[in-house]
Image 1 (cartoon, one colour):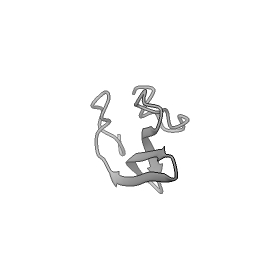
Image 2 (cartoon, rainbow, N blue to C red):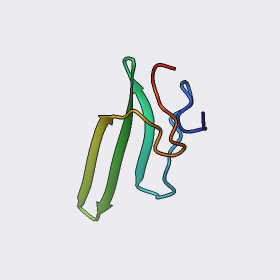
Image 3 (spheres, rainbow, N blue to C red):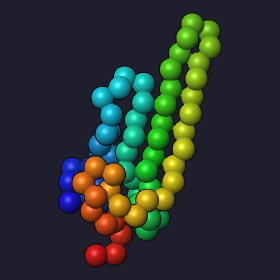
Length: 67
């Protein structure tokens, strides 16, 4: 178990970028990869969010869910 996929971890961001977050999160009893991107350009802004189920941690490869 790594710092990114540990249940109860504070949704540690996997990126070092200023305007984006990629995190392993939990929704109900499932693990999800949450992607949040936002950036502003003067009067315009760009926002993207998506979330999807995953079975393995993208950082350490550990199987998530039932042990």
